[in-house]
Length: 372
Image 1 (tube, rainbow, N blue to C red):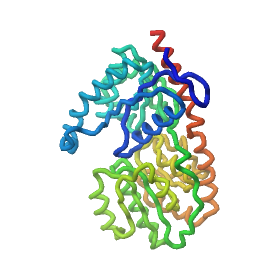
Image 2: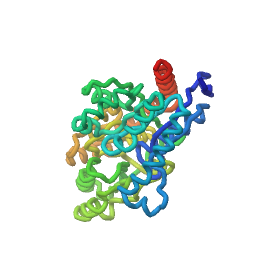
Image 3: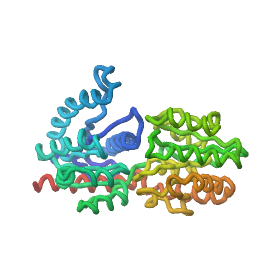
Image 4: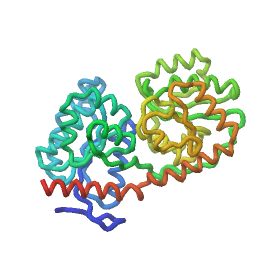
């Protein structure tokens, strides 16, 4: 068995192939994949990456979604087949819907064919809906994985509803990039930041309504929505209809390396999502020392305790969201206490704490492979 010793623990890392996306575009799974590979390599692990969103060649085809998937698929499968033969463990970052069928399921099948144990690292707040509607073969195939790992207890509960066991290894926050910032004196012009894609499931329409209500008390309040997606034109039109055009910025996707600077300019982080798992944006707000208001959906209550490290409201309730924002802006002692609690909690998601969990998972999967 080939293995590299961890530079920190002195224990042997099995040879791992990580299968997943990289930025660009930036996104939760892509950022987690990039961080994981970078940190594993820095720790001395022998890691190969098979990227499932590699740039399309020719570039023109990359602008057509269906063609883009087809053009990527053949080289992806070819690279995956070769890498699976070299690896002792395949670590597959997986999601719901077409991403499962196009990328995760083929990786699991190739692992089975090559005799390489597979860890399905399943992510995404839509798992409940996906599993409920999925054909029986989806769950049957998932049972063939050596290990199933989710980043949250919420997803583990979803898996259990379908007779699947799963371990929890949380998302990673790179505390070398994110660090608590001193609170700003926002005066009459507080700045709220949302870091979610411009898609209906992320509740951005409610965030705009909440801003309109907030501006009745704080007329100079502003909102930055850091993300991109198909809902942009609709949201821009809604902002105009609410008289918020000058108060809302849509800068598009902000590179992961630039997110700390955005949080440094924020007085409150807002997560208005209607579906969620373990959002990176919440963890990054904690790490940046920014007080948080979030909806109480999915796995969020597993990491955000109302009144302890953030404020929770129901999804779609603009009045409650605005009230929570005003509560934090009007009670800066409360805001500081919540931010400090979040900054303390996020230490559990730093690499020094998560490293050992992945090392144990890889070693367990490798044992399954040798036993098979």
